[in-house]
Image (cartoon, rainbow, N blue to C red; front, side, top):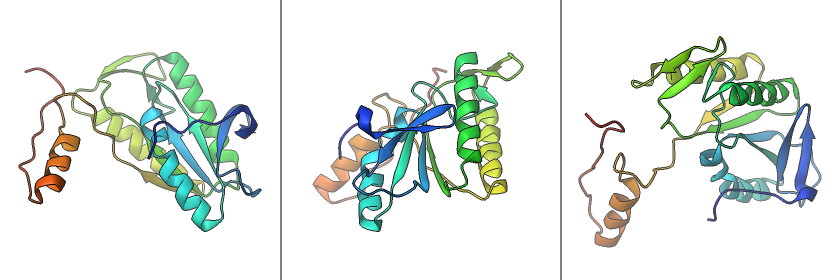
Length: 183
């Protein structure tokens, strides 16, 4: 379906202190849907565009390249600030009703809003940030959808390889997963 959803200069839309990339600019309607996250979220832009065309609606892709969509936990201070600004602009836009969130889960060393280094090997802190994010969307009358991470070409999850074999041989293949950390 393509790679990361990107847009031309003519598709850029200012959203408060941030910007978005128009999805389905063939119609002139106020976007009600936002695709929010890093490049793993942006991979879904093409599929979302197809659905928006079908529904005669417009959306926005708000890229957080190399950053997590969490305003309280991220890779570094720059990402924390960027995520907070973008998220606040989504919350403050009354036209946005649906937020599709996606990101990679791989990063184990993070920083919180107090500048503390967090080692999140068991995903406890990321899970907590996801819950806060979804609750905040709901509290602000927005529906949030969390999409699973795209499998990466590492040993930790061999879904693409397994799935293509299931299709080719028309039978279920045993799932192979690995820890992201060496033991």
